[in-house]
Image (tube, rainbow, N blue to C red; front, side, top):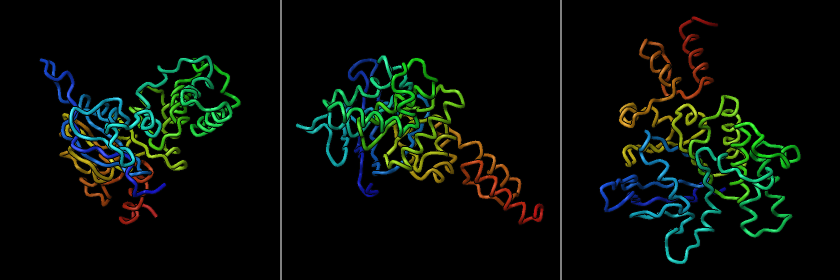
Length: 293
């Protein structure tokens, strides 16, 4: 996948709910950024900051009050553009997507999108098999089962497979691990990581979990009261305490621990994002002080 190609471009985007009424509210306020092909981007911010509203513009579910959205260089609201084609390029997985499962079998649920595309039976079967494999589910074992008999993590992955079967180039997920037990959460996050690393999808997630963002994303976009207030590499943004505080967020716990250790004169880097990195950094500091061999 060409890393310099822009998948999504948002230009001076505004979105106002209930315009011209006493309930008018600006949910996205003059937001601009680009997401390049192959990136893994997290969008974060406090509840009500505009995250979910923003991502619904990426495939035309919402029309901007003002501004533009481009997918692969095409202004999606330009006259003559087919939104159906845009939605095949940008797949959106809503929060609690398992609530949208409704067919008798897993196969039928995953095949729903390809069926609506008018594809032949062989192509639909190929897409369903491939999509289930991509989310770590065995086709033969699961295809004839009812989706309602599955675990929470399996349901979430089946819902993801339904989007992947449309063969988008961009997958956008709203709180993909929300509400799952620890096992289901680990399953889903692992598969999301693989979708990006192994299969090359451009991935965008909305998340309240800074720990999940630290493990998965390369770049973070921070929203606060409908405005974009930070956009950069994960390590850089999680080092911006003033920005995170303004947005009602905190860096991952392990990052805060390393800052606490540095504040107690331990010679460690503070831009640490994972437990594994922290372990190596602490051992390095202890060795330099002669505490361990």
